[in-house]
Image 1 (tube, rainbow, N blue to C red):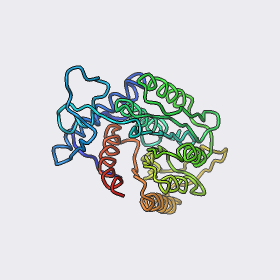
Image 2 (image 1 turned 180 degrees about the vertical axis):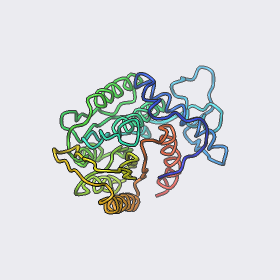
Image 3 (image 1 turned 90 degrees about the vertical axis):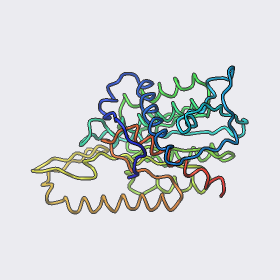
Length: 312
């Protein structure tokens, strides 16, 4: 798991989930992350200004670069040509396993959706294009094409809210949707951010992510797991029910704990090694972690990756 940059008061994910509408939650997460980014900047971070100028009266406020402001406490206007505008695809895994909420107050689906909603808010603030893809459950699968208009945020968050409210019942892999994004972006590089538990029996999702990176797209993965999935803290005779099938099993957790933890360790190592080796920005995230910390780590990691990828 990546370490967080900066310190300060954190909102528990359950507290944040009760704040109100999705746009409000997204804004609160972004504000918390940018506050942390500002603190992190005091330790020597830098910003490229080749496409920036200092704010002057009369400049459009919508073009303010809030990341630059968070780092330097000065207001800069982001200047770009249409060709340099970033296109971001936010991909949410809505398969049934994402409904699990054992050791945390919110499900993996809600946690993942909230982080992606905050990213959508931030991307629109940056005047970049954002699209949204829900995958893993054919009943809620959808794609919102990427756009940069301020009103587009309402459309994206509205669809996200519907998907998160309806829940997750399917068992499809995100790999098919990732392949579709690869087709749509063949002529132009994009940033693809997948939030998923990566529970895929044949590792097709890992291969699809590696293929996107091989096509020179920037790819980030939020590998979202519940604390109970990683720790297996159950005691006494317990009935376990599969979320993506009708299977259930009554077992003594002590009898299978060692094997379960060994398999989980191997699974996490395989995900980290495969994606890291492919050049994917990989974040293992627990659903009891403050959401603004997860967003902050993603922003910090991306700011470190950009100079190297521009040089490659």
